Image (tube, rainbow, N blue to C red):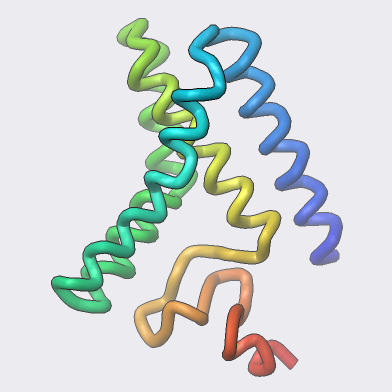
Amino acid sequence: MKNTLKLEEVGLLLLSTGYYFTQLDLGWGWFLALFFVPDLAFIAIVINKRVATVAYNFMHHRGVMALVIITGYLLKNDIVLMCGIVFMAHSFFDRVLGYGLKYFDSFDHTHLGWIGKSKHKNG
């Protein structure tokens, strides 16, 4: 089942990047420049771990990204639409790698299971 979910994420990643490159005409530069921006939410760790977890989950939440995409589309604002699509693609990419939304107890504990040094806890 895990491989089926990863395959679904690959399909969604291809769909979102396909839309970006065929409909927005903004090029690779913007895509690459924005692709890892959601991970900058980890900088909130300087405040504390709880704030960093909330920031990370907010920047990787598909519902939030869907609202950004819808807002960009309705306002006919390609910049907002671009950010939503690239951030959504990043979220799909993370899920393919096994990264999910974080729990407060540990950054290794995600809604998809344990990752990193704690991966042995999945068993």
